[in-house]
Length: 254
Image 1 (cartoon, helix red, strand yellow):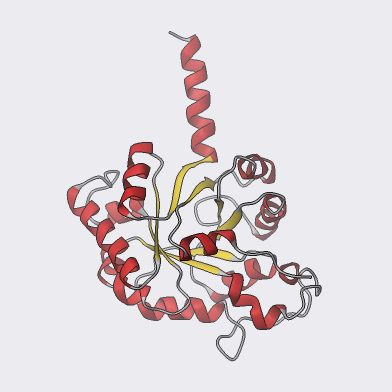
Image 2 (cartoon, rainbow, N blue to C red):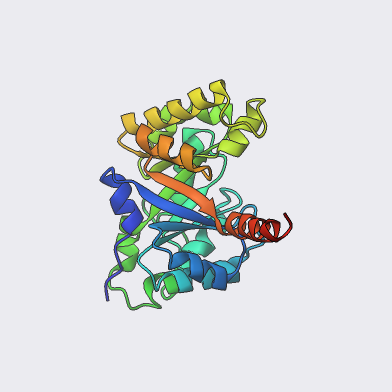
């Protein structure tokens, strides 16, 4: 048995734009609906959503039926939090608030089996189809993708060094946290924030890595895509449900 190709990793390494949707509702059913939309990737949020390991695994299971890649965002870079999602089948991880190259190297090591890293070894888990993928452990890193989030001024200043770390695939800007940390809460369109966002993309490109960003406003998403961002999330299940239900009720209350 062979591990399937990570379509998101293949796309961003080739410089092709890949459009994604955030999954914040912590529901396998809603994630299954989103996965069938034709999105190239989806993000199972373990930082700001009420997900646990079992709910993350359930969403990985339903997403696997569709030609999209499920990315799991963890709450932190804790190696123990990295190990378990990998074992239940996450191949693509997003780690929030990465600020230094040293931190990025530690994350890569936590995703990697010895001798290159210190990921805990288990013979049979969901990631290797319960022991059915021949040579899984030796080749596990081949289909893994690591997106590190740049979310404050320190991360922006160190973006070039972070992008140069072997094993980092994407510098993913968190515009909400970045704008907040730069004194422009709720206004990622502020000039100085946009300059920082552009500098992160350029740092990624200079290292041959991809740039990513969350852009729920369509005009912003098109602009970022035109600028060269390739891993772009254009909305969320929560936002679609909230705005859709708001618009429906409002249409009857005029």
